[in-house]
Length: 309
Image (cartoon, rainbow, N blue to C red; front, side, top):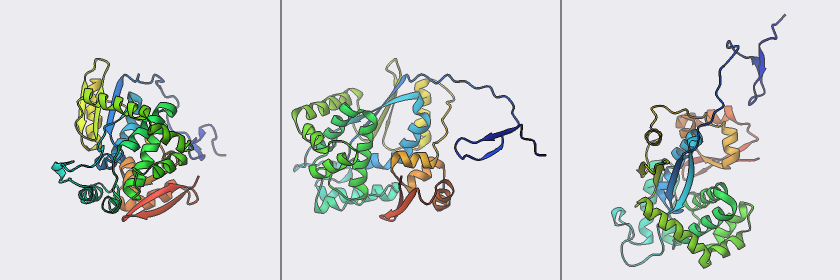
């Protein structure tokens, strides 16, 4: 007769089997105290911020128990004018942005169309930024971050003009919020005042570009990381701020949990989160998800996956 003494039902898979050789395991329920402040200085139309989404998400998922994230709007584009906007990248007028964005998208594989900057250009990043601040004020950081992600998806991958208030209203409505009320408040002086507070913080932090990630300890000492960097770079920065040689990363969430939370993931984001090669993404997803739980689509030659739940 089969020995049923050393059996366990796995919480995630629901499969029952042998528990393993170790009868007793010493564990530590003490969670690291969140003493680190992480400031993420960004802007809704920042293409390089879009490009670091895969790496930054993994960093927060695995090491977010060590720090509190505070996303700060930096004010990339108030309006177009006759002078240079970003001469380092050859950007003097809206049409100049299209080629730069496509280069960023091709390099990062976070898809960017960019053609709207020729036909129907974004006139300012301030309206989308003010809405972020209003949502953050009334509904918290998580909902504001969800809004920022949806706005970037619409702009970069699906070529929608997020300086158009009707587009922004629709994005907010899809979050289950009152889009008209939030957009209306963001367009008032109070909305601009919230944004001005972020601009002051950006100046105090000494951030001069996007993305900038600043990690600071209780003694107001820390590290500043400018531009997109490899995953290990952020981990090393966190070690320096904590003055620790080793950190204990959390296990990545299962793909089913991550997709249910994020609603949409591009192939590159899955590859980075789970150390999967591009050619292996399809088989990985088939192993991790039921075919009824997701839809696979393509945009600009890149696959993306949405939840059906």
